[in-house]
Image (cartoon, rainbow, N blue to C red):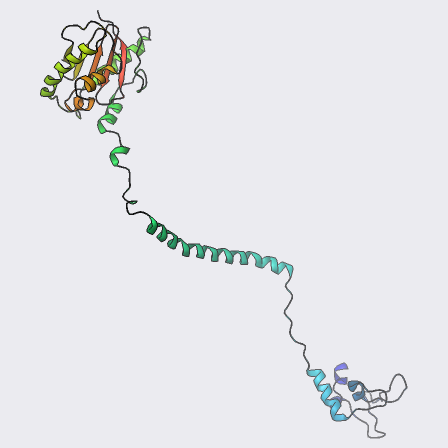
Length: 286
């Protein structure tokens, strides 16, 4: 019914008599205020009761009113949709940030390598400084249990437990036992070092030096130095280096494995394989 009223030219028939119009039921339309018949075009043009706008004018206005469409507005964003979109937005920003870091990383590394000094790449620790001598490592692996840790020379007292004293004897015997990696005995070196050590011990002895104080034993693998007093853990190396003009390394290269000193109370065994391996124990002279 309403749609038909909005199209007066197509649907509403007009009566021929009296110039009045009728609606679908054949009844005249009247003004509710004054009872005067009212033309449909009066409503379209906004005219008062009994006043009729020109026919063509009203038709254009009616068609314009029907064809008018309000401008489209964006749909409002719901809070739920906004919350769902936030993680995707954060993920996109994170991907962009990662791409920026990857793009700038090669430039930073290139600038760092360009600013480094020319000799920086070649400044590496020498292999000999990082590794211990092979002979020293092999000696530590093959040696029997030591009564006290390496770095401590003792001495092993006469009152020490029998087990500890037995360990000291076994260890000192292993110190002088040759291995397949040890060098052969250099007899010219041995013949030259024995007189030098004899002269050195007479000078350094704090007691009465016995006759023939220096001799080679254990198949020329050990040099024993007898003295009256003053045998300590440092005496064998000091006699070689300070008074005989040699060293523990030269003695080892000549096949000498142990240099020992022996006074009226103690005997100290100095290994030439490992300069830190010194063991002293009680050994009173009979």
